[in-house]
Amino acid sequence: MRVAIALVVLLSTACAPSEAERFTPVDLPAETSAPGAAATAPTAPRVETVQVSADVQVVVEWPVTTDEDTIAMINTFRDYRAGSFRSVVTGGEDTAYYETVQEGASMDAYAWVKAFLDQRRSVRGVSRLYALNVVSVTGRGAELNACVDETGMRLLDAETGKAVRKQPDWARRPFLQVAGLRRGDDGVWRIKLLQHAKPFSDASKGCHR
Image (cartoon, rainbow, N blue to C red; front, side, top):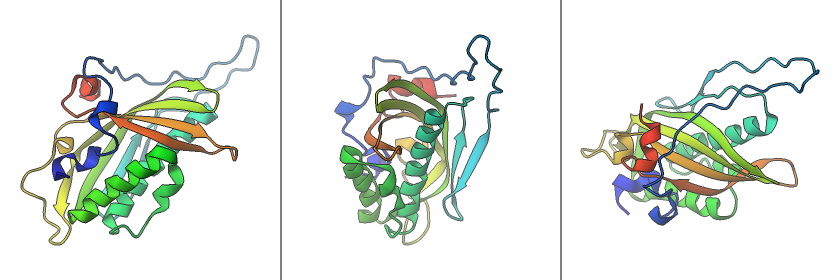
């Protein structure tokens, strides 16, 4: 497996959104009250920083929303992304990210981390998540779109700690990530399907800014 595609080995390209489809990121609207009900103040937009290690951060640009399920789904996606990086920088010792995934996504998440470990690669820098948008909810299932910007990250040789000479595409352009989630009997949302669009594809152009 080539290093250049290590960060997008979540699913085969065939499962990614069609390159003919243009993704347009939008913020979730503020929660509104029903007619006659007391007004509910929306949650103000905020930026959250998760310190994965001394050299790695995951920054989340939260949309404006008060919906509890939406917040829970974004939390799950954030914890998956941060947990996966934490597993990489600890050489696979930290496996807490397993708790955020199930079914097919479990295999993809494991393969993502394993690709780094097999090639003796690590990372440093900032991964930024933005334009987080729950685009559909059907029963216990939901789909979350997110833009991922890792142009502030560098792929490293894990043994020397130095950046590799040829950096992959994910370090040059943001890309679109799609997560299919399911709410379990315990009420917890977990990721069961992961898809991505290549950084330079039409589907990811809506994430470029």
